[in-house]
Length: 261
Image (cartoon, rainbow, N blue to C red; front, side):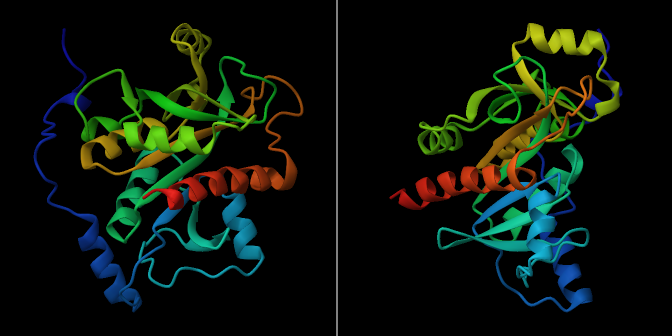
């Protein structure tokens, strides 16, 4: 069987010529950004609700973040400063900024993205701790060989499970990662259901492929907020555009992470 061209000429064991440190070096030079580190825990907020709230409330921007495309705001979570990066939507953008965050001092990355419900685990909104993600996007294939799923790392999963063992708003399961949200056909949805996937989103498979390829600790959550617009009054996130629940989620992980020896 012929393989699709996107799988040709991949050399997963070879280093990249273009590295995030090079991009960040030139951005610092051009934008006169001082050398320093981002917080060791960072959050990807693809919808941008928390990031916009922080910006509007006068939160500090991290002065050392040298990305050309985004801004990193600082959030105090139980005395720990967490970096929040908004609107990095989709696999390629999420992985681009994730690479830059780890090159800038991040040690744990949490992604919390909106998702559409595939198999109900309750009435939306609720969170899915993503343990596997169907690789229906392109970015993951640049990091890991062909396989149906990308999976969370064992240590990251153990951390999240420990942090959230008493949570009533988090379930664990698989998701479908697509890079074409308006091509979610009935047939594709039926296949996702047959695979017992709970939700569809746009970043997790690529982030987990990056995590496996480079040994980065990454935890992905799908915030199930909608039924893909097939009912009215959809896409509701709850209190404060979902920010209250998101911060509680992050707080639980931060506390467990800090309590580790």
